[in-house]
Length: 163
Image (cartoon, rainbow, N blue to C red; front, side):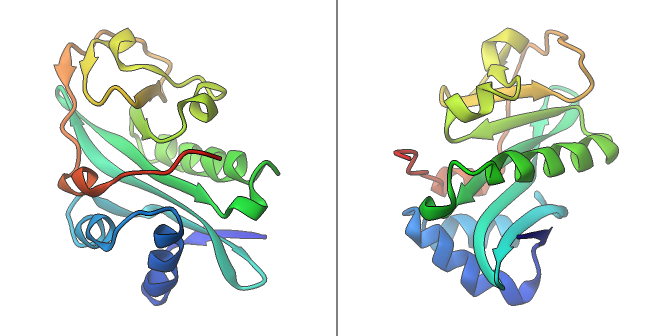
């Protein structure tokens, strides 16, 4: 298994994976072509040269700081529950911290993210999607008292979290 950054040659395979999770092209097209997209924080997980996982961080606005939105983090169902999501997440969070970001807001399976210290938005005084959680990368639990401004592409995101 290999974790690497997204390359332009991956785009069709990424869209195929997104379709498996009922995520439409508008989400990825709008995100990939926006100023919110961060190539250093967009990863694929490969198994035998096939993309079986994806994780994308994009910029959001939290009060006076630029935070990150983590959406999606996906692993093909037959590869789930093997620790691969954990490895992807840890890699991304480590790089996000190295790049100087302070906060990450997740979309998706809250039970998964809660295992890694993500908390409800209201713990930080943040108004936003009720299906989102937040993590402080700098261990500062300051009250932000703001509404999160997500990348426009997020409005196209509907993640199937049955697994």
